[in-house]
Each structure stands twice: as C-alpha cells, then as structure tokens.
Image (cartoon, rainbow, N blue to C red):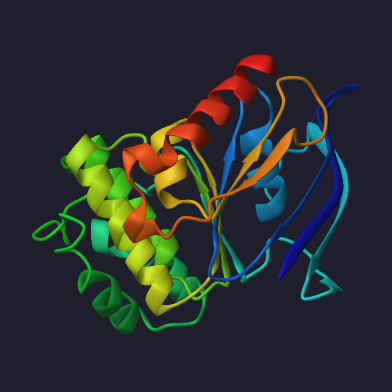
Length: 244
C-alpha cells in the first residue's frame, strides 16, 4: 500500500497543490481528474521524485508503512510526452527500464519485443523514434513503463495521443495485465469516459490549491460497465468539475 499525506506543492511562494492525501492499493486503478492547471501532473512528478528544483514540496509518503526515498524502483512513471531517446531504437527504448533494473540487454529486448504485436509495433523493433508516428511513440513509451516490475505505475494521460480504436485496445490490455500481475495504478486523465470505464476509484482535484474535493469508488465490475450504468457517475463528475 502506498500512502501520501499532506502533500503541498509550491512554485515560488504560490501553492498549486495543498494538503493532497491519498492511498493507493496494488491491483486497483485510481484515476486523478481535475481542471487543467490544478496540479495533477505535479502530483505524479512528486511521487516519481522528479519535480524540477524551482518547484518545492512538503508531504509524507510511505510504502507498506515505511518512508521511502524517490525515485524508487517500485514507482514507474510515464510522462505526457513519450520521452523516447532519439539515439535508441524503438526496442531499445522500450527495454530501457528493464535494463536499468538489472536485466541483460538481450533479455530485456526479448521481453518487450514479445509485446510489440499487441501494441501495433511489430516490424518497428530496429526503427528510431523519428521514423514512426506520434501515436506509435506513445505506445512504445507506455510499453516501456508497464513492463517494469514496479508495484505502482504513475501514468500521465498515457492514451491521449492515440486514436479511438487503439486507445480502447491499450485500455483493455492494461486492465488484462493488471488482472494477471496486480499492481497499483494512478492515472491522470481528462476523459471522463476513460476514467469511469477503467478506474476502481476516481479522485477529483479542485481548480485552486486545496485538498481533493471527492473520492468516488466505481463499484460496478468492469465487464458490466455500460453507458447506462455509468451515466450517473459521469453526471456527478461533470458537476464536481464545473463547481471547482
């Protein structure tokens, strides 16, 4: 269990996030939504331990009750941009996290390439980022993040650059992988349909610096989530976002 208590993030003297607290559990997807500029990405960067020096933060974080120092191997992070290295092949980029965790280059590459078909990347193993589309780069970045052995995954709008069909496939792939290998996911999204279809719970941030305004569980099993079943929850989320 990953626990965050009293997180406050400041840019200079201005607070952009105040008293943010949450608990993440393995095997559950938590979606984080809120108006643009409310600090969602800064929360993920703080958890990943990569806030820039100009941004300061105070808050406590524990893993299974023990304080941790970040960056931490049990926290894998995917930023909004694909952040692929232009001098590495697509297979090399996708395997990078596994290599950094100690896998041999050969073993890491074999593991990621096994998923290239499911990710629509077959035949791209030896190409470079500039040679493929933005959506393909995003899928490669997602694969790089999700194949790591970390217990928690921090995803910042991981499917925003994908077309509708590919987005659905990647969402289904992620949910299926979590069933086979449970881990905790905290995912930033602006898409209420995506949030209600994927999440076990949805955290709603306010526009101004302040604590979360709502923590909403989604109790309907994913396989039973229809538009009618989720309509009330989406209406509630829309009203909360409009009020913040």
